[in-house]
Length: 66
Image (cartoon, rainbow, N blue to C red; front, side, top):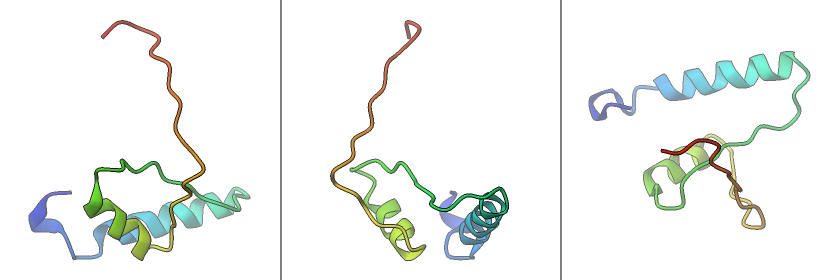
């Protein structure tokens, strides 16, 4: 998000709306992929009630040459 738009509740409102829609479809648990190095995001996700699960890692496979 643009630094001039931070701390206005925009991201939180979007996340709340997405979570409510997910619950409406029967969702029971949400997850977020956050880079280890993105410490600014760690605080935002933590403030939204998410917590890190250190036992999980993301696995990827490129399907096309970059």
